[in-house]
Image 1 (cartoon, rainbow, N blue to C red):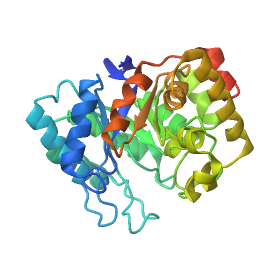
Image 2 (image 1 turned 180 degrees about the horizontal axis):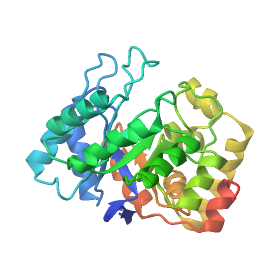
Image 3 (image 1 turned 120 degrees about the vertical axis):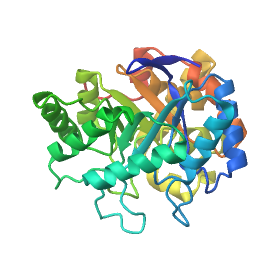
Length: 319
């Protein structure tokens, strides 16, 4: 699987997401997925303190499964380990959890469950724009200085807030935020169920293009929208996909994908992910799986490369 620089590490362009580990995905399945992912050359595993069973929220379920797998396989050093903290309580999504005490507690609990002394990157899952950005950056700096994480990132932060955070870091001798994790796929999303999620737009794209900041994409396959639409047609899509991605622009993109498939021989799913991993800044697509075949298919996507012209013909952001 193709790799590129993430900090000072060479990291797989396709990362394995673990949001359902410990919930819909049993530990046995999760271990099979991680084994298969490692076998095809993947080394980026993304998790979060809040991941696991969202029906009966118990923080750390996903991290515990990953921690046991890392220990049993003795592969911590080979794995680029990414986790997130600072998420609001699932039962009260409006409540901020970005105090120094809460962030540091999440970090400590994550390390314990992951059975490691340090992660490669620790992200803040959400923002609270009422909290001074300097306060947050000072807390993140403490995690780096303690050796608990090598890098820090933010998820679901607007570009202006990220730029403000890094200006503060530079002016106060702190470590800037290394990466941004946001919702980004080839499909344009028409409706979003969660107003707290941040989606790639022209402003965010320009920020990444100008700064070269690493971009990690969640919901990178848009729920498999293009693959399912190509295979079964509009009438067979579930109502959620129709509601979230049903628009003329996406129908036109599918026709472009079909044409590009004929040129490259790549599958629709691989092309949709290559669109992300071939952006003009370091981009990593985070992909979840519900079946082992989904994991094995990531090898094609992880090796796929398209040209800038092919990428922009699918969907272009203003330069």
